[in-house]
Amino acid sequence: MLKKVFGSAVFGVEATTITVEVNVNGGIGYHLVGLPDNAIKESNYRIAAALQNNGYKIPGKKITINMAPADLRKEGSAYDLTLAIGILVASKQIKADALGDYIIMGELSLDGGLQPIRGVLPIAIKAKEEGFKGFILPTQNAKEAAIVNGLTVYGVDNINQVIQFFDKNEPLEQTIIDTKEEFEKNLNFPEFDFSDVKGQESIKRCMEIAAAGGHNIILIGPPGAGKTMLAKRLPSILPPMTLNEALETTKIHSVAGRIKANIGIMAQRPFRSPHHTISNVALVGGGSYPQPGEISLSHNGVLFLDELPEFKREVLEVMRQPLEDREVTISRAKFTVTYPSSFMLVASMNPSPSGYFNDPSAPVTSSPAEMQRYLSKVSGPLLDRIDIHIEVTPVPFEKLSDERKGESSVEIRKRVTLARALQTQRFEDSLTVHYNAQMNTKQIRKHCELDEPSKGLLKTAMERLNLSARAYDRILKVSRTIADLEGATSINGAHISEAIQYRSLDREGWLG
Image (cartoon, rainbow, N blue to C red; front, side):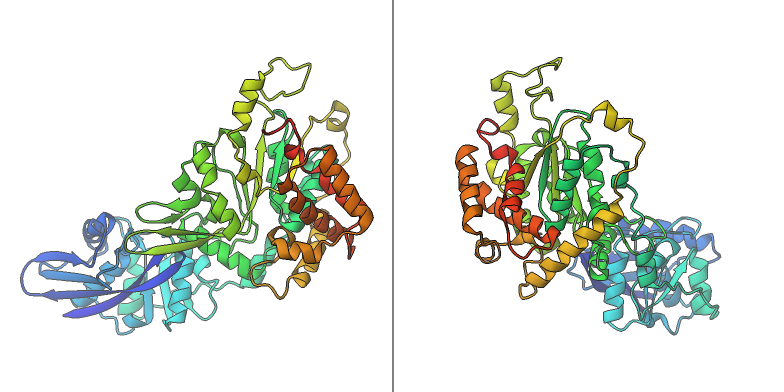
């Protein structure tokens, strides 16, 4: 007897429906075809034990299972439940008239319990698109699938519940969540708050400008000055994610298996901080079965690279294209996947190998040759994509011991959101540009016009401070953001002079 059950496979951030055809007839043997990987080939042991422990069995007949489309590679243990139900129905141990209405996915334990799976959100979106009535999956993933409106989602703990649902019409508990309410619930309670930071007013201001214009930023300062502490708090002042952004972000984290159990939708912007020993594949994504890398996991959020010169040079170089294109394409012989990667880059570094450049009281100093070798690890083309360079100085004791609370992230975020609203209006006709950091040369000329005194100020600064040509456009972009934070329609001298301060690394004597 032949029966069809439906599962799903995820490629990139999109799902493809898989038809599992189970044929049971006379003879003996178990044949699984359709390019399954080792995890799927081993499933017959898990299925046999799970069925036996729940009063059923794999029949002693010839079982042929085809996973169609047969030329598409299938991977992972999420098909255990799909295969088990198919075998039970095809061998007439249970009846299931409504089997074709559901996508069924889940990894089986030997006692019949279900383990969570990856990529649930893209699977649920595809199931709704293709007109399936419902989605049966492990309880831990149910909230994530229930984000998709118009799809009945049943979270189950044991294979027995699925058997009784089809065979005896025993109802399963439907998982229902209000996506909007779930999304807004966690919006205004950031884990890290700017009110915790003592002193560092100028750096907070810098972070606010970076958040308002979506500018990449690098923090340079000695150990213990607060670089990491400030970077961790940046997502809390970024504008709240829109529902579309939240769904897109949840999708990527779902594919990578990074969503915590019983969480529906990701409301907070992601913050990723990979260690400097990371490989280029782990950073941009890839592998023999491509997975999203750190730059895609930080999509719509912040990627923090602590101790930038410690990263391998080739690792930093592979980031150059995704920083420009805001997506990364991974090509293999048989297929190509594209992951979105629109993130804010925040980097930090010590000014020298010892960390105490130009500090006369420092216990260790570095020679000019060591300094040059250390700083040359960070390439000019990468720095070219970083708009703001700021020096972070240690906080004096008086500020550290001050009991007064600083301005909260929620307050700063209000100003950032207003500035972003101005930019949304400014670039409403553009499909690729949404905020100031993304402006191309033509848009800079259009939206960053200077009066004569401002032009003179910029000319003097570039000559006196030996600023490089690459700094020119960056200064204009940043000054446009500073003007937006003030609600000013045009850029004036004060905006230009503040933006000039944020180009430390372009000055003579920093990077050769």
